[in-house]
Each structure stands twice: as structure tokens, then as C-alpha cells.
Length: 185
Image (cartoon, rainbow, N blue to C red):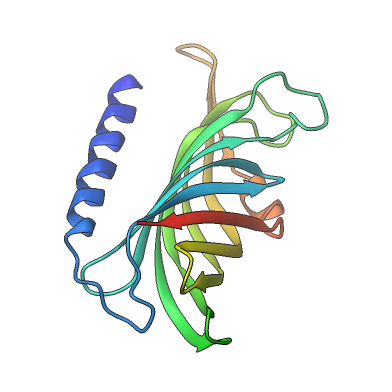
């Protein structure tokens, strides 16, 4: 499994470097952003960069809070998520503030608990969307949105006892809002 994580990390880093070479277009001149994500699902770090061909690519490294906040688990799970955001609508809200509605697909992988089951591996398709508030004079953006994961949860106990189930938290926790505060470089 170590090799899978190393491979995913290499792919993420290469795709990030590739996206940094993208031309900046659009009304609000999006550029590299880094910050934190906060939600009842979990919290973590986010890196957003413009992509060639339009849209923004986002890499998230998250601590999954399933059963940690209610004291049933001692440790959070970990998830890595790749998302591609496309601008759906842009609007100026004044001299200093603009809003951009975004949405798009992605992938999620990690080691998480799911609805009272043991920790297991997660692989899922993701979809996310929300509103990105961009401040023009201050290099900060605030994103408020929702995301859902549809995929498989695999528990490997030993060579002969493996379980694969539908990842229930991906859609049950889709309505939990996410808030992200990012610095724009």
C-alpha cells in the first residue's frame, strides 16, 4: 500500500507543477492559492492552482472525523482528494468583493472509518461545488460549499477475510458544509 501512496503523491505533485504553468485568464485573475478546509466531516490543507484549458485544480489532504468528534474513535482517518473546479457564474459584489459559483468532479482515496465499521481503504469518485468569495485588494479567498463521494470502502483483516462495501459516509455527509480560507500568491 505504501507504493500506492507514493504513486499518488508523485502524480499529484506533477499535476500541480503542470497546472502552475497555466495561463491566467478570467475576470478575477485566479492564481495559486493555499489554505485550510474546515467542516464537521474533517479538516485539512488545500492547494488550488489554475489549469490549462480553464478551471481550477485542487488537491486536499484531510483528516476524516468519522466518530472522532463523538468520542467513539481515538484517531481520525486520512483522505486525499483531487478536484477540478469549473467557474459556473461570476459576479462583482462591489469594488472589493466578487463571487464565483464553481462545481466539478474529482477523485478521493484514503484510510477511513465508515458508519461504525473498522478502518478501511477508500476509493471514490467525488463531486463538489459552492461559492468562492474573492477579495480584490486583499489576497484572500473564502470558499463555502458541499462535496459528496461515491465509492468503495475496503477492509482488509487478513489474507482470507476482506470486506468491500459501498462508502456510506460519502453521501450521508454530503450536506455537511465546508468552509475554506485560502491565501492567494
